[in-house]
Length: 541
Image (cartoon, rainbow, N blue to C red; front, side, top):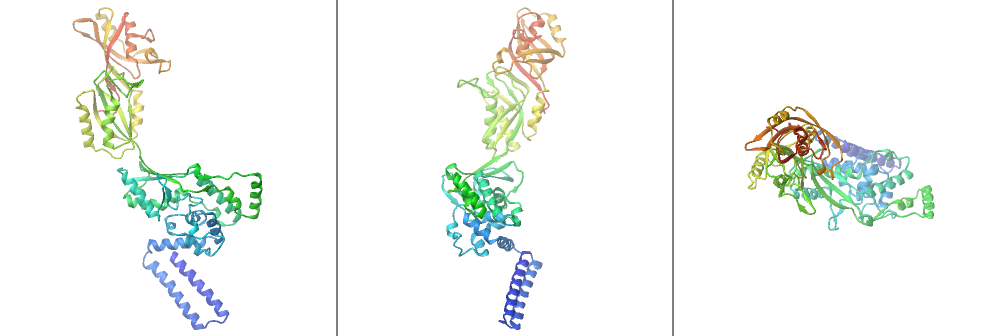
């Protein structure tokens, strides 16, 4: 349709010329008929182009760009060019049609020729207009400073998109879709606001002032997104893989003119006279393009399973006190150091459904855990996960084991947290009492079901836990005798999550009541403790 309109405009122009010539009697009827036939043929050619086949992208884009250039008031173009506004920002701010990749090919020379700007001494020449745009600071000109502070200028949006695609490929991320994010400094918004305030003051009746403008961020996305999708052979959506273009501007590169009372007075006079001196004073002068940092980030992925701890000298997480490691290793480091390299991630975080003390073993079915891999570049296959699990289970030192290692969805984090407070835990404790164990002791312990106890924060953790009273439930208990020794026995029990087992056994100076010591009526000490099961519906067989 754009081609038809363009030829219609030519047709009307030709008719106007012919009309003037007829009135002045400078042409003949034959000449008029000949020119009319030429114009009619042009219109017919345009119609056949549209009806006979779809116009190519280049033709359509050029027509839209030229049509938009013609639609802009020539005085507006002159004003904005004289201020140092680039051609893409001119289209973005004052063109009625929406801004997209079509306008990437429209140059300053097109704007000048279409709006009779060339030869106007009040407007800088095109060679003088090669600096950084006062509004977008080079973002839409594809000019930026790299990490070495070298100014880089891409010739087109295609070249710029190719450069970004090269950076992405060098990051070695695996993805089939991506999201594009753009961040720009606040001075861009401030200068754009100043320019629009000036235009509204001078051209208050223009229709384009009330149209919605495309932001610099969205304009850049429109210019390069399709090109990026083609270069990366990927679609664009709400993908966990994000490409982020971060533009920054150093405060040293921006000067904001402070106004004196005299300048304020001149500003009011300029506004009344419609002068752009007022705008020049409010704009922040920029001498260098923005610095560009291209970042790539993928949302975390989660691996889950159950871990077993066979040593009484291994902490759950890395434990350092006064620069000295506590224990010979940690569950977190053993699992994380084996999975992280397979994902080519930046870092990992370890999360578990509760914790045991460093001197407590984790046996039975194991304790549920999640390992969060940050910014992963690859997703390990099911076979590779099996290999990693087997490797950890066959380490020479046999400190830690893993069961059911699986790649999980993000919502499993919430499932584990929800089930953590409701879980039951089973223990086996080696206990010493100050007198010989009697048969009635076995009966008195095993008869207690759903026993409610009150625990004050234990003395051993008061330095890091709030002093609170906590009510917990002991679901069941029984005693297993140790042959040949009447003062030692194994205590098996099942409790509510969060129960302090050591304190329940010895009483913690009366801070836990009742306790095994108070029930048996003698001094009781716990010598060893194992967690034998964590009852929780999470990655069970």
